[in-house]
Image (cartoon, rainbow, N blue to C red; front, side, top):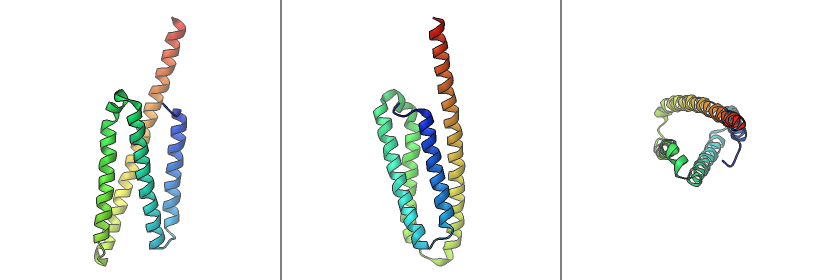
Length: 143
């Protein structure tokens, strides 16, 4: 593993804080500035997805098999994001704007709930890894 688990969790914390700060700042910005932030967030998501895919490929078949479901989820999320962009470009009608904003807020809430669940799963995985390492060291010392 290239990074320590604690470093990965710190990276996750930084990403979450940046997302929180961007949302807070967007409440006071113009539509053009928000769309600029959105485009940057899309580019960041694409770059992060590519980085994860590269890390999975470099980890080998054993780890890659475990990540296939997550990789498929990431690909599906990116496809959904692309579809959302295409749909957004077609939707310029003002009467749909309010319903679209509400739907996007629900989607964002679900994405946040999903992220929280993934963080909880990551926490469990880290604790499993730490417990496994401790157990391995105890067995090695006992031998």
